[in-house]
Length: 218
Image 1 (tube, rainbow, N blue to C red):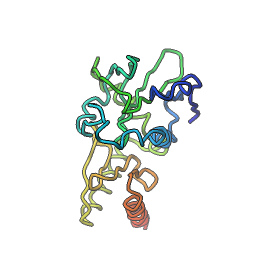
Image 2 (cartoon, helix red, strand yellow; image 1 turned 120 degrees about the vertical axis):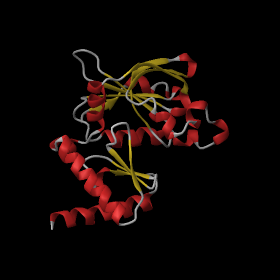
Image 3 (cartoon, rainbow, N blue to C red; image 1 turned 120 degrees about the horizontal axis):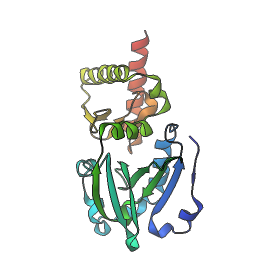
């Protein structure tokens, strides 16, 4: 994915607003960009006493905004509209996707500490949900059909449950596997698609997935 931070956004870091311009369907590095951007100001949300209403919401609360057209009011009354793609669970950073006609898609990152209000403007239809899902899907998963991805997910979920590892499904489409509530696995469900803030758990689960894939191939 070719992407870059707009120079204008770097002049006002106190606003907590960053923009990433990209080609929507070439997004193998998107998760890395999300992690980098959310890490930039993670220290701003560690003090619970300074957390705003948006930061105090739970992941289940944030999920009700996903795949919807929203208007975000940020500090100094800056307003941003776009389709809410995801919310970073650590920093509460909002990721908005917009699709201007005849232009490359644009992602806006609004840091959680800068959010004052989020208003839902429109529900996303099935076409929009699929378009947004493709942004987060790594390029590797696009080589699989929806049926193949579902089969891989169910096989991995069954294997984890057999090994007494608590696992569930997350997201409106149930595409993400959640392990013990602290680690997520995205399509196509390999070690590279694991993400967690706990490095010890991350390494252990990645090792388990590697063993699972070896068993599948043998």
